[in-house]
Length: 115
Length: 107
Image (cartoon, rainbow over all chains, first blue to last red; front, side, top):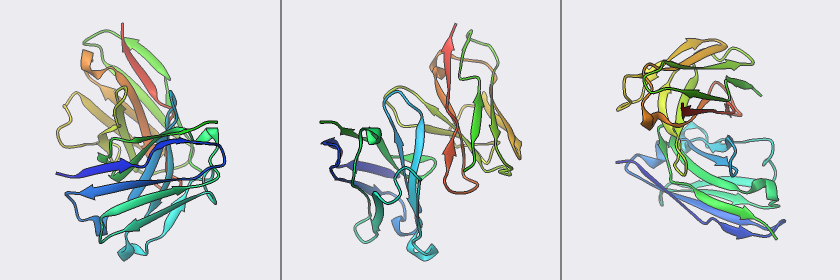
């Protein structure tokens, strides 16, 4: 059974940094194109970015609001996927989901940016 | 970026009613469209992929159609457990984008 487990969420002050992790199991992680999607409280879904598999070039694409502040990476031997966030603002407050394929989502981890 | 306009933003219907949600893309996305269901406090669940194909295990009352720029999602006979917010989503190109969501309630 495919499983994705996010961790690393929490409370951070504006301007701060936070790194989210996502552990994958039950699928061939190295072949997966991994995606982050977020959802601000009471709002809709927002695509954050995606990293292709290394076999597909490992290319990373970002949404405009996070480009230059967020970095997506992967560690295939550990079956881990990461979202390094810096320069955080209150607009980044959201539940962050990691996704293997569109039918397989993690449970989400809450990031709250507040002073 | 491709904009997805969902309509309506919310609806109230009776149990057993047929419910239809539309999603209009700002440019041709072929059939690269998903439909998700999200219940409060839960991760979204994929119901329909490639505009009209049902994900494994999805009840047959859920269906999707369309291609190009106009898509529809239908619940043929609304059940109480279908209360949720539904989102369309395009994966034709990056950045991937979502519709703003349609909240479905029971009348």
